[in-house]
Length: 100
Image (cartoon, rainbow, N blue to C red; front, side):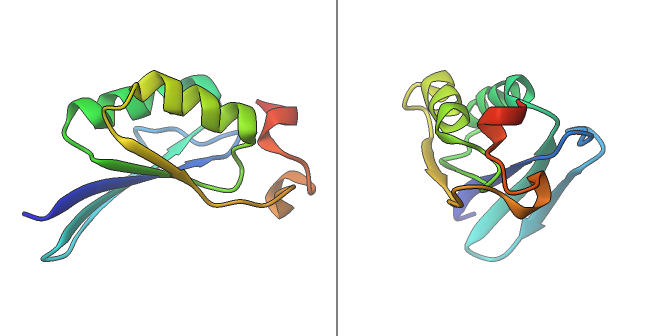
């Protein structure tokens, strides 16, 4: 198996148990997880890192505060990257920091 990675997206009614899938390719195992807020994102990131996920990418719904919370939570156990918008279209062009 190659790299284990994850993509977390945040949406107000997302549920990490229901909104989750794993995509396997010969080089990559990608776990996609939807979370309802930053607290759930932190919990999911800690769990994913403990399962050997090496890289966690956060959707553009995460503002700078949300990214910082996830990065601090995994404490170097996984790399954290982010897709960036100044405001996300799904959130009325606001940052997740304003919502979560």
